[in-house]
Every structure is written in C-alpha cells, then in structure tokens.
Length: 570
Image (cartoon, one colour):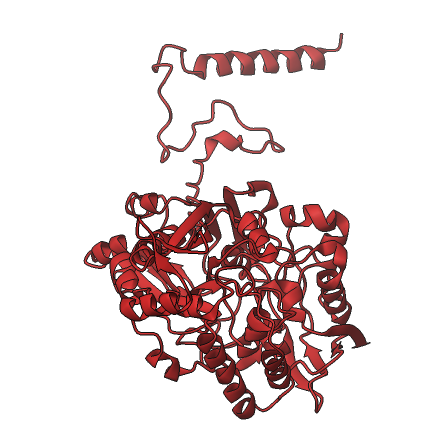
C-alpha cells in the first residue's frame, strides 16, 4: 500500500481515540437526569460541515393550551316523536332548529317583517302572488348554493302528500306553485288571496333546507341529517333521537337578519350547543342547579319562584303568541253538543284559581281563543264568563241535567260524563286535574286518559273527546281559521258554521289589517259566545338560566330562542 494510506489511517485512529477519551463516562450522571433547557449542548467531536444540529439539542417550545370550546347546554322538555320541521308539529323542535334554518323573512316582536334569506319582497294587489329577491352568495351547510330553485324545491317538499306534513302544510294556505324567475328571484303563487303568507314564511317550519340533503336521504331519514343555512350546523353523528341534539357553529355564516333579530355579524359566539330532554318537570331545577344544563325550558312555576331569589340564576317568562292554553269543546259529540252545557263549563271553571295554584300567578288568565300578547287580541272578552258556579248549575238544570245520588248529574238515565285526554307537557295534567275537581262541584264528571302527543292529535282529529286541552303557537290572526273554519286543520271544536266560514274567508282575503283585524275579533267573540273553547291561561314559557348566560332572547312566538348573540361569562 501507498504511504499516504497509512498516514490517513493513522489520523483516523487518533481521532477515534480522542473521541472516546473525551466522551463522558456512562456513570457520570444519573440515567434520569435531563439537560437543563438553558444549557448549550457540548459537542464531543467536531461536526462535519454538512451536519445539522440534532433536533433534541434545542429546548422544545411550550405549546399554547387549546382554547376551550364555548359550549351551552340547554334543557328541552317534551320528548318529540320527530324533528323534521317540514313534517313534525311540536314547538319543541323549533328550539334547536331555529338556529339551523334561516327563513325568507323574520318577524319582530312589534310585528314588523325584516329581511332574512330574502333581501326584499313584494305582493300583487290581491295577495295571490309574492315575489322574493334573494340574498346572493348564501350556501347551505353542505355547500349547496341557496337560490330560487332551492326555495321551489322546499315548498314542493312541504306540499307533497308523501311528506305527510303536520304543521308546515297548514302554513302554506291555498298554495298553487312556485316560479323560478331567475337565480335570485322567486315567485310564490296561491289559488286565492293569502295575505298571511309573509307570517308563514317567517316560521321555522318553512325554514330553507338543502335540496341536496333531503333528496339524498328521503322523507324518513332526512331528520337524521338536517342541513340548513343558519348560524349553527346540525351534528348528525351526535344526534340521538329523543335524547340528544347537538349543534356546532357555522364558521361561514355572514348573512343573518338585521337587528333586533340578530345584533352582530359573522359567526356566532358559541361553538357548540348541546340539547338534552328532561320530560319530568320535577328534575329540571335540580339539573340546572347541578350544572348539567345552563338553560332549562318550562321550569315548574314553584321552582321559578324559588330560583328567582338566587343571584346565580335568571328567570325569563315569555308569554307565547297565538292560542293560549285552551280546552277545545267538541260541539258535535254529546253532551257538549249542547250550548248550555258548554257555557256551564265556562262558568264552572275557576281560571284564576288554576293560574294561582298551579302557575303561581306567573301566567295571565286567558279569556278567549287568542292570547293577550297576540296581534288582534279582543280585550272585550275579559268581561265574559266570570267564575259563577251557581250560574253553571242553573244552565245545567235548564239543559235537563239533574243531580244524581253521588252528585253527578243525570239525564235520561245517563250520567253527565265528559271525555278528555291528559298529556304530560305544559302542566296539562295538573291543569286538567284541577279542572276535573272544579267541574265535579257543579255535577260534571270529567274522565281523562293519559296519552302521548301523537295519540292526542289522533283522538282530537277523530273527535273522540268532549274536551281537548291544548296549546298552539301562531302570530297572525288568520290562524283562527285553522281553529274554527269548517275545513281548519285544528278545528277540534268541530265547528260547522257558515257564518264563521264566510267571515274567516273574508278576513283572510283582506290585505288591510285595519279591516281584517276587526273581523278576527268578531270571530273571537263568536267563539266565546258559542263556547267553542274553554280558555285557561295565556301560555307562558318559563325559562331559567345561569347568570353567566348573556344575550339569550326569544322570538315573537315566545318559544324559539335566538342563540346567535349568546355569550357565556367565564
């Protein structure tokens, strides 16, 4: 070999020896000792020119803790059979879904319409056609563009017989068709005048859903995969029917309605909202106090009175618009087919006593088929039917009902027995039981059967009842047609009156509210003079929440919360 090789070999061997000699002995430090972050690493050999420092020689940067999601937990009450707003009718579904779906227009608490997904609108002279100019650059949560075709597809879905819509279809009135004028202009046509359509268009039941989604999943399964344009998205993977609904923030949201509906722009402040059902009223306050939820709907009045004294909580009482808590009196089913019997029931009911005992005076007494906060309320009804059990007994005597051996009245060998249906929501059971005791005092036996919501609807539709306690929500007085027109969808008093039909049809075709409202007030008076309903209380939604919840408001109906502006204090 050449001498240069041996020289080079020698240099290498010397370098290796030096390296070994300079390396720290294995026992020089305890095995668990780590270098201090401020110590510079001591090289043991000269680094080659191409060497990069080992990544472990520099102290690792301290990672910032991820921000905790701002999550609101909300307690629902009635366990609903379904949550598709185009199909199902419960007010409970609107509590979460008002934030998933936007509507074409919104209605303020002083009954003024403001832009929603439509930036402007107009109606023709006879209110048989409404034209909407739509906002541009709006997208559904799945990326589908919102446009005129989407509006047409939504209304086609609602009015399709296969959908079997329970409430949304009643809001479509005499619907004819929808025309796509251009991509951002749509015209909705009706077979006859329908001035109330703007009110309908502001309802969550006519919220705009993604046509891509409801066509993909079909009528049955869409409720598991709901897609809107709203400030929150429906989290399908966390949806547990009758148990849990979860929403998460839509980061792209920037097309919300103006104040006073929403009071900022851009995405919502909350990151998530988790809804749980608490059907047993006795558990609601406890779950609020333990922190299981931060907002609880329909708190029992006695708990509301107690928590109102505690600074850790807020109580919001919201009177709902539309029909109050009433009992429909079946005018076709004996013995309530007799006007004197129906009037006796009204005189024999101590409504103030029910409101004081069950609702702790947190609800106003109801005097007719339309609540005191509703547009077109007839205040003159408050003078009718004061509590007068003697007057009630006299009317029953006139109708031929005589006291029996046990106090229950008898006529032609038959007891004066009425059939009703108890339900577990809205303190209907408690109110019905107290009503039961009051009517017994005038010789009327009220028998009740406890049923679920769908079974009660079926019984009411079939007319199996004498009394059907119920509460509905609405904002336009034209909804009185749903209650009392012979073709009304909720005509559970089974009214068949040509005079009422003509008056309701005339009012529904009148654009000028200064002329239509007196007609609707006349219907309210007719309903009470003919004792079609037994009013009990203006339905009041009693909501309790942590004092840390800021900015939670409710819509004009009194049922549906706006979560968009809600913040949580730390």
